[in-house]
Amino acid sequence: MASRVKAALIGGTGYGGAEILRRLLFHPRVEVVRVTAADNIGKRVGEVHFNLAGLTDLRFEELPPKEAAAGVDVVFLAMPHKVTAKVAMELFDLPVRIVDLSGDFRLRSAAEYREFYGVDHPAPERLGTFAYGLPELNREAIRTARYIASPGCFATTIALGLAPLAKTGLLKGPIRTVAATGSSGSGANPQITTHHPLRAVNLRTYKPLSHQHQPEILQTLHDAGGGEVALEFVPVSAPLPRGIFASSFVDVPESVTEERLAKAWRDAYANEPFIRVVEGRFPEVVAVAGGNYVEVAYKLSEAFDGRRSVVCFSALDNLVKGGAGQAIQAFNVMMGFDEGETLREPGLWP
Image 1 (tube, rainbow, N blue to C red):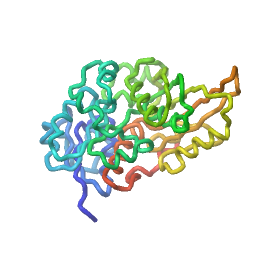
Image 2: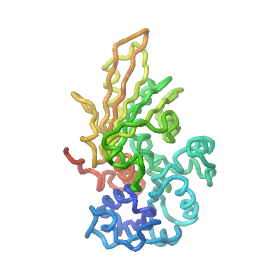
Image 3: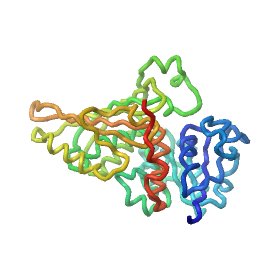
Image 4: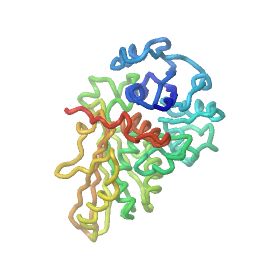
């Protein structure tokens, strides 16, 4: 076997870092040589991520970015937005590839970043230089990329649910989406919105009509062929650890038929290894939790006042296809590896 790619993970103590390690430690083409963090310094990986106990001797180190990246081929960045961009800026002059799981390099517009992330981007000239790491819609750009901006969890769920309409020219006008997400999307550090006694018996919205993934979704759908669209997005905190379930409502002409929609979904995803177009039922989180798969489906309404509505359903695991798994999928494409390496196993049932 050819020599393995050497990888470093910066920001390894969160849930995203745990999922990256769970996959990369068993990737036959990768050797994880270094894991850094801002907390739990000196502890073995298994002392923080209990599921990895005994599987690696790696310890969490506190190192400057350039030292963390010394001698490796690729750096995975698994830190919060606003923090990640400043770390990435210290790596640009090194001969390393970057896979960034934060939102800091997904948008091409500095003005939109300022509006939705609340700060000026520290390296606006770098916006647009990262390949957007959604293989189903951007595979060719990923193949030749040096830097990848891995998509957000909501953005992946919603965009993949709507992409068949965008690709066939049927996505125009307003989109109205409600999407429920699990508590792991809020990160490993507990807070009132993830505190079990409140989360386990509750549904609540947050950032309605102003979530930071909103411009990312619109940018992605436009790139996929969507027309002039507007998005009204209401995220919901759900009482489950993993998973996102999205329902998106779109108006289409009265002439649109069930057969046309079936062809649109079939053509969009016929050759995609991680997309399931489900029939005879609708997507469910339990069918994808723990795995890198996405379930999608649609429902066409009866005609009313010259229009019809299509409801686009999609479900995925926010930590895998919505996070670390997708980052590894795009990394595999970038490196010319088998795209499904260390990602093919299904999730748990139930």
